[in-house]
Length: 426
Image (tube, rainbow, N blue to C red; front, side, top):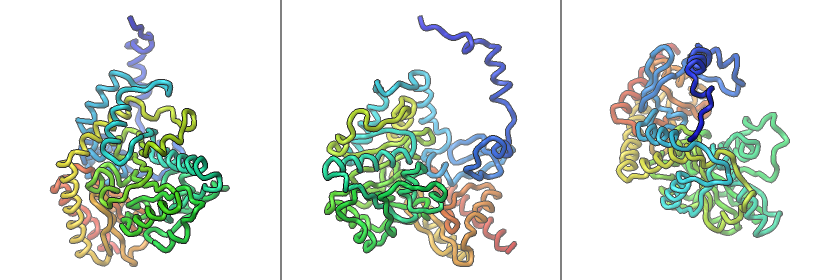
């Protein structure tokens, strides 16, 4: 019969934990005292969520149009996901890499059945998925063509993660300053610029990595002609085309993955964020031929593909991939866009355009409001709504995919109220 450690079952120990650790008062100031200052979080601290509703420590309610940066696609504490996680938490949590498990096998089957891919590699974050994709591309090129084929091409203003490798591939210098020397053989092109792509992608390129919809770079949709040219250039030079769908994938644009809306198929696709609805998991998807390049021991991760994460991800995937669900996302995306276009028409002094796809939209500020997207974000938050920014000139909206028409109308009301207050104070 299994034994239990006395410290895990003792009532006195449990009571002590509850009073000394789990109920200790903490505030926003605690962040400044004990956490490494890599973020500057808002003054309020959310403590509870349900769907698109959040409440902070003071009990104030917020309409969440961030979904944790396009992560909680099914909303906070979605009962389907809670049930799946709870069931697995009472069954099996973790195994070492010397063993597989049933949930990861089921998730692998589901993802390959739903996409172009034949094989899946699971890890814990978008950065890790992109790291795996780039390592695979280098390894494949070296094996097939030789070590000279190693250059990686990415786009300016892209974002592919925070490891030293992926932050170097991302074309934003503000994220690499102070971390030099950076990994070599990485070049950048102008997003949506075909001439720039043609000039950069030659026979020594092993991989071209691109977001089909740039997120952090300003919510900029990829032109179909540009993405097709990247596909053609990769075919011509033997480079691999990697689509980073960490933010645009998992139903965000009304398709399971955004590449499906273009009809342009990559060699490798990366997914994270919404894949776990907040539980850390990511995936690199690819073909049989390319996957064979990575042999036993050539890459790995301790937590990747563990039963908890893959159970959650399968529940998320099976919910989102349903045709009726994706049709509703497209409907909601059209509703949100038309609502925001009307708002922009009424506030032309603040916003110049709305861009993006599905339920990932960016409101671009005018020249007069350059650098002030953060001011708009703070004003909206003060009125009970959470929004994102994408740089200092774009307000980003990424609500959960279950957003209702009534919530879109409420978001419109709050943004208008906030803009009126800002304009009055100007």
